[in-house]
Image 1 (cartoon, one colour):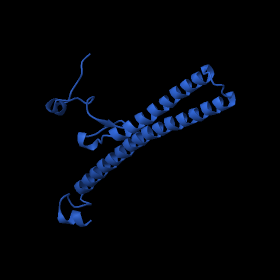
Image 2 (cartoon, rainbow, N blue to C red):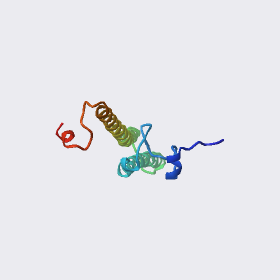
Image 3 (cartoon, rainbow, N blue to C red):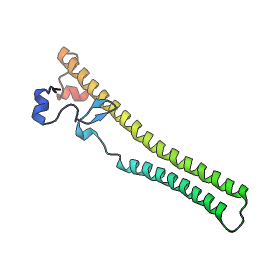
Length: 141
């Protein structure tokens, strides 16, 4: 299997596959922001949800096998409460991941709009309907 590289890719030492991408668009390294904090929060919420499920299992086992008589209704109610809270924590983790993905999509859209605006300005300047970029008349428009 052979890979074809353009001259610019060979000069930079990377290929199209190793360039960072946001929502399927190849972007510069400077356009990518790390979202490690939000990813850690999602990991933390999901970890707490798993911990609550484990604690619920331990509570049920100790309630059933304990020497002190415990009402099954109370045990069931506590288990349901812990499952609900675990589900909410897991959902918060999913919302954090969704925030990261929507941020990437929004950032890619801004990059594409900036590229499209630049290309339109270049075409208008070449056609003579706009002054060339970088001139005083361009800054006033």
